[in-house]
Length: 237
Image (cartoon, rainbow, N blue to C red; front, side, top):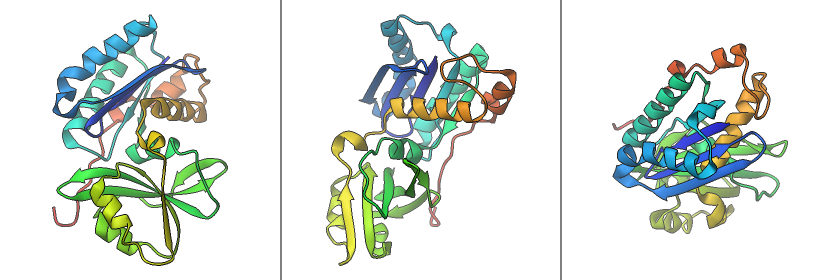
């Protein structure tokens, strides 16, 4: 069983996945209460499923970029649980979790995933579709909505993630030939269920099997001590 933890922004999302199916998932806006709510929420989720954290095979955690406080809280607790349980800890980037939730696609379309960075800034990353999956095409960077829209070349774009009112206003100013569509609201949310599936996929790529105890080689490849949160700074910071 894999526990997925995502506290990269104001939302907090948790999931339990046994390698065959998603057992439970919960997402809420925790804001500044993540530090006090995270551990109790994990135990409540396990209780609802009738399982114990002693049953864990692995832990997956969102490592950012995102909020400094949120990432620090989530990564620290994930490391603690993984170390205590003696299981691997899989690090998954924020924007890849967003991309994993997007099912709609048109040929020759660039997916742009967004999270808020505060002070009118956003974190963006571009993805390309290959073999029925989205792959990162540019490393995440900090920008503003206005600069992002102005930088887009002629083509088709699909936006997902945290698209606020300022983003929608900026999108409306896109140049002719820049075709922007928004992912449906239900698919824009960053879900720990998607994080869990990405975590299992990483374990399998390293030689593990879905839902099965991991080998020592896999455990060594995902040592909890190696996982660190990822923070971004803009050139003006």
